Every structure is written in structure tokens, then in C-alpha cells.
Length: 104
Image (tube, rainbow, N blue to C red; front, side, top):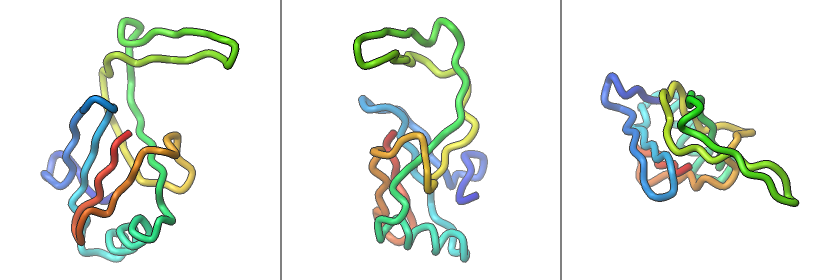
């Protein structure tokens, strides 16, 4: 774990692209290693766990497949920088020596 909303070390928000999270990286082995791997470009994917009810989503289909559109989330439980995440193009940034910024 790198941060929590309860301690103020993780900030969550929503913008025109989607979920935005920013964490104040702890001065720990895990924090320093994660920051370095993001800065080098080894970590560039992210994932998160959320719930949505039937009114907060809709589905469409076309020749390319089925697509799920989420309009509202009922709960957000985990967001993480990871090796094989659900969001490979989310744009993780090591903004400075103490902050990771992710837009999903």
C-alpha cells in the first residue's frame, strides 16, 4: 500500500477523462522502488476495483464487440499501479519525488 484517503495520502477525483488518483509516495522501500519504476517507465499500467448498479451503466454492441459504459460508480475500493493492469494507457506520471499521478 502506498496511500489511503483516510490518512490524506491518497487523493481521488473525477475529470473529463475519468478517475484521477494521486498518492504522496512514502519514504519506504516500497514507495521509493515504486516511484523509481514509474519514473523509468517500467510501471505504466493501473487498475482499480469498483462497484456499479444497473442504473449506472449501459451496454452497446457493434461489429468490433460489446462495450460497457459506466455513468456512475457506487463504490471505489482499490486503485493501484501494477504490472498487468486493466488500463494500459492510463498515463501514470512520477510528478516529483513524492507524488504519483494517474488518470484512468
